[in-house]
Length: 296
Image 1 (cartoon, helix red, strand yellow):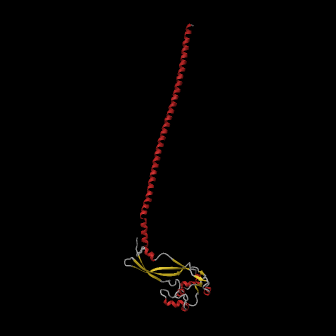
Image 2 (tube, rainbow, N blue to C red; image 1 turned 90 degrees about the vertical axis):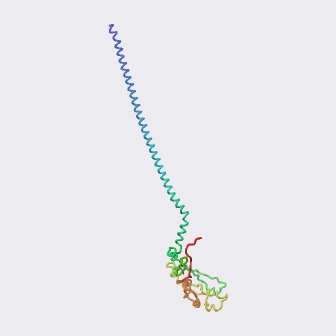
């Protein structure tokens, strides 16, 4: 009994020691597991941070590269734009400077070439046959109260009525053109021809009549004093006013006075008297002009 009592404490101690070792082992194992897990967690976290750092660095490098690329492109575009602007400025400024210096001279030379009278030049051909149409409109004044004027000339007011326009086309051609030996002077004459305007002359106007001033009688009257002699009435007729056709006053008419003085008339077209009849188909005086360019 005494022997047994000694063995029990040792067994209990061993048992307790084993349990304690097991607990310590479990604690160590648990702590190791936790430490290992913490280490693994830290390792993962470190790797993740490294990956994030690498990713951030890569993105930063890419952003920097993109920024550099964008800056380079902007610089290229700016350089290209400045180059284009310089070219445009040169294209504008250089001609402007050139024209400001030589434009007046160029224009004057072109004008001189266009108007200079030289044989077989544009200016000469244009001068010889100008591309223009000359239209003349004639108006007559009909005296509406001739009887009152003759009856009481001192107190009667002359009443005039303007006729419609009688339109004619004047063709003036240069003929008998002769150049001097040195081509510095040119002589010519002008031939004139009046024709009724094809559209403006109203055909019904040929029937217009009225009392018009007889220019030939008026000119003849100036040869006498305030009170004319009987010769004036013998040659010019006793009637002061005559009722005549309006168009004939322009294109030609005859009268007793005209037949009397006709033999003394000079110049072309002496068959009739009229405002344009005497000039129609006639030749004006000879002209001589100097050609070339004259500079002050």
